[in-house]
Image (tube, rainbow, N blue to C red; front, side, top):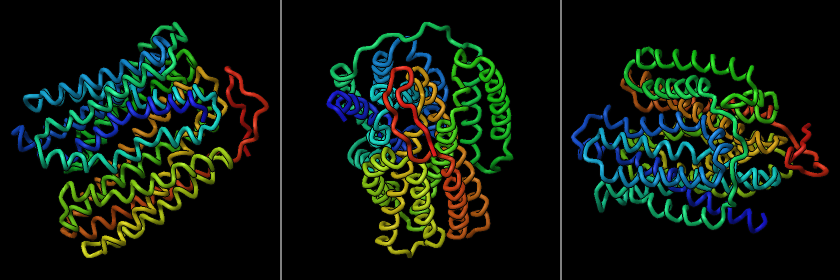
Length: 468
């Protein structure tokens, strides 16, 4: 990449480290928060749930905000909101105030994550998208490696309030680098906000995420606080889809872009990748804790090999995506994840930690290889003004897929564990995870293959891509 694009990537990635570290750091502190805030587990779970729902509310409006105020201004504003939310979280005096301040953080993070991808792809003009996605995915790879370790160390030497101060250096550095390296831009559109679309889509996403987040509790999908939000959310989503198809580019999110095959295939892939990734991130640390007796920090340390594997494959996956296309990189990546998940369907507390670590490295290599082509392919052949819509669509697909995979595997694990055989329960849940990954492997065949080079890219259509 040329120097200006490299600097832009560094500025964006440094800022994005704050929310991605935050989510993994806070996950190890839930038991500490229950004790120190004198609150029930259900109340403390809202520390994570409130953050997730705030992101779900924010993501749909990011594209319109970027057109309205410009990319750099929106990035800086989102980073400031996240920074302020982090400082407020460290000053929280009870669980209610902490949840409220986590919602502030979630609003900032919800704007940053889709905007990160959009700004980089727009700046690159659609060229070398695979390598760009290797850069974009760096925080996603580093978060699971360093987040639990940092969280465990901070809790070991200090109080939970210090967990939120970890975000501050990244956010401040991100603001400085944004000032230096993100090109100034202005509004690119003056259209009115699709208020009715927002009223339909944001509550739809919140309802679905809220329902799925409750499915892990006793009763599973039969709980009223699961099926009712899911039904309402699905109805609102259906209403939004019908309206958006008619309105086209005037809609809050232009769903007519899904007629573009690469974006449609990428959206399916992002949903299934989210299910496989986040579902596995639920089962693996839980199995280490339940079957091996590890604590939260120990489980985080045992997951480091997977993060290392993801780092190892990112660069080559980006180059291969640009060279041979997304399809076979994703198919092979999902295949590697599938094969490397099978051993956990037979593992127990006596399984060698060295063997577990080696398998996790291989699984991480597959996850890293999958992430790049699916993130990259959705932008092929799109005009620059359409890229914020594509980023929103793929981000929502990943978020909903992650919530779906986590909910399904949590229900399977809970139901199987009711028989009093924890080892067998985890084995059954891992077979479900393997089935989800197998479905994703087949679906990856829908992705475009090798691209023919375009004679020349233009602002209206940065890449004119043919697939075969």
